[in-house]
Image (cartoon, rainbow, N blue to C red):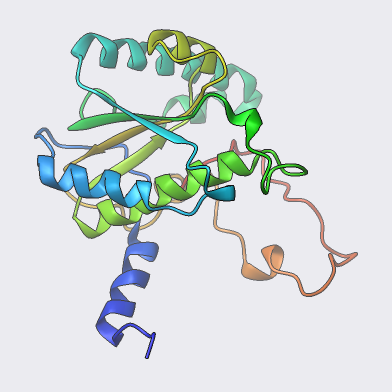
Length: 226
C-alpha cells in the first residue's frame, strides 16, 4: 500500500540514471515557478539532526556572475597544474557553464554549525552530506523538469565567501549552473571524454567486512560529479 505505481517508480529510476552533470547550456531564463519547485525540492532533503544546514543564494547580478566565473577559471588553471601529466587533457575539458546557463545558484553551509551536535559528534562532516542531499534533490528534480544542472566545485572557498559577503564560518560548497540544454549527454561527460570510467559494483559494495583483497582505486582523476 505504500508502494508507488509502476510508472511512478520508473520515473524515479529514470531521473536517477539519466541525470547528468551538464556543462553545455542554451540561452533562456528558467521559469520562476519551476525554479521555486526546484529550490523547494532541495529544502525537503534529509539533514543530520534536522539542522537544515544549506543556504542557497541566487545570483542575479551580472557582475557577480562574472566574478564567480573568473574565480572558477583561476582555480581551473591551478587544478590543471596540480594534475601533472594530465594537465593538457584537463584543460581541454569544459568544466562549467556559468556564463551560458539561465540561473547560477551558490549553495553553502550555514554559519553557527558548531552548536549542532546531534549526529555530528563523531561525524561533523555530516552537515556537508546533508547539503549534498539537498543538491541531489534539486538535480533529480531538474532532470525531471527537462533542465540541465552542473555542480561546479573548482573555486577558492575563501574568495567566494568574501565575494558573497558570507559570515566567516559559513562555507560555500557548490556553484550550480541551471538552465535549458539542447540534449542531455548519453553518458557522463567525463566518461565520454575518456577521463575515467564507472567502477564495477563489486569494487564498491562489500558484505559484512572490508575484504582483504580490496584495493584502493588507481585512478588519477580528480573528484568529479558524473
